[in-house]
Image (cartoon, rainbow over all chains, first blue to last red; front, side, top):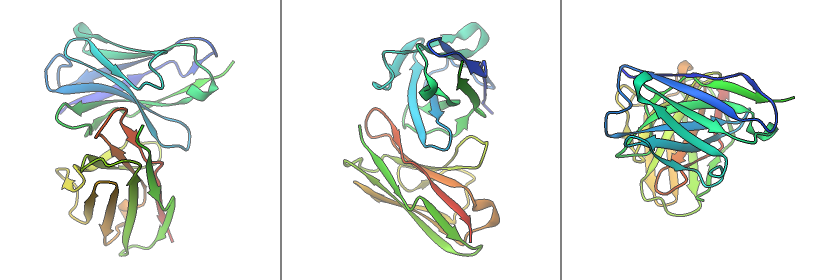
Length: 120
Length: 107
């Protein structure tokens, strides 16, 4: 059974870069057929899809965040990462990683989420 | 972007009730819609995909319906474990977008 686990800094200062890692167990991120995704949820709000990585490094991002987002992978450690630059308080959210099937944009495998607060 | 609007935002109900949540898309999304259940402090749990296909292991009291721009999630016989927030998500076009959520609370 695939499991995903986020790890993040907890607190990031405004204008800095937010980085969160997702460690995958029970399955390889190099295996085909899946998008490895990032989604976030602002406090008390709905979910927002950030983007995903697939096919050995190809990426696709939400246009609203594209200029600030990079998703990368570390196949040797079976991890993928989110990097969000120039953060503001509006980027305070719970960040989730998830595995989406390539055949459909839905996921039955999510991490537990990590809260990242942007504050000085 | 396709906007997803859920109604109501909050729904008060009792165990055993039949409840229905509506999700409307700003443009047609065919049947490319999924429903998630989320409890406080937890990740979303997949309930239904392709508008009406029940995810494995999800009780049959959860029923999804609709196509185009209007969709519903019905819980037929609300159970204590069902008090949670429910969100719809479209995956017809990018960016994938979610509804704002419907909280089902104890009446």
